[in-house]
Image 1 (spheres, rainbow, N blue to C red):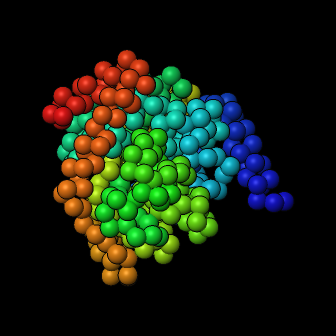
Image 2: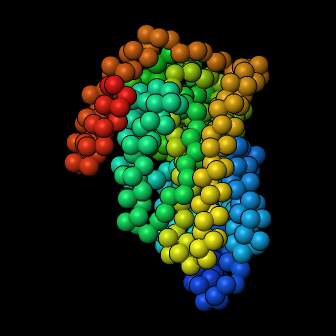
Amino acid sequence: MNRRSHALGLLATIAAAAVGTGTAAQAATGWDMYVYNPVATVSAVKGMNRIIAEIEKETNGALTIRLHLGGSLPIKTTNITQAVSQGIVQMGDDGYFLGNVPIGGVLRLPMLIRTPEEFKKAQAIMQPYIDKAFAKKGVLVLGTYVYPFQVPFSRKKLTDLDDIKGQKIRVTSPEQGAFIQKLGGAPVTLGAPEVPSALDRGVVDGVLTASSGGGNTWRDLLKYNYRIGINYFDSLIVVNKAAFDKLAPDVQAKVRKIVTDLTPSITEAMAKEEEALTKKMAAGGMVVTEEKPEDRAKAEKLIAPYWDEWAKEKGPEAIEALKKVRAALGR
């Protein structure tokens, strides 16, 4: 049996199990969780395994969760929302949800949010909008963790913004893509599992990511890193509402509390390791260039008109949400 046939068979088994979990009242429940990260050694996956272990411990095994790494199932990173909505997997680490929940793009607009403190302020405004959009798909958002600033890396010379012109840059959202286009680059949307081969084959020249994300994972395929922060990348811990509602109330409460309590530790771990990993990559031969103030001013001026253009394209709710966030941030 080839790998794809095996994976499809596993999906069928998972789907059948999802149907069957509600038939045995009070019986132990088994869930499957899909994450977009393809390696288990990154902080995000370590954090998710810790959350899973704590859930299984605190519920005395009433709920067990099997984690599947990115690329191990035939689920695209951009389809995690649908996979959870349809009950193919009951739980997901969903960082590529903007195609399904566009309103969340307010938090990804390039150069809009400049510090972790500003992100928290904006997130508090946006969370009700995001929760409402996911709820329409039968999905609950239980928690969020946030990567450090997304910065450009490349195989080709990249020591200032002008160097992006003519380069093919992997992006994680249309909002990042718009920014790269304005700089004269060619944006390419790829999920994390697809990036190494794309870099190796020259499908892309570089990526937007954090050192504590793909930067460290793909460091052997990259030669330059320019430390200008484009935007933060928030990843949501989501569950299928129907599956969640079948859990006993005390189990539901424990799951909610554990995810709420532990997801901030993922954000903190990545923030702490960002500088150390960047220095390690520089020591290993990567050309790391600190942000130039004139480049930041140039980037903000270039992209600011896009914020309102983006909101108008998305509709009245996006216009309203962006207005609130800009007012809270003073821009």
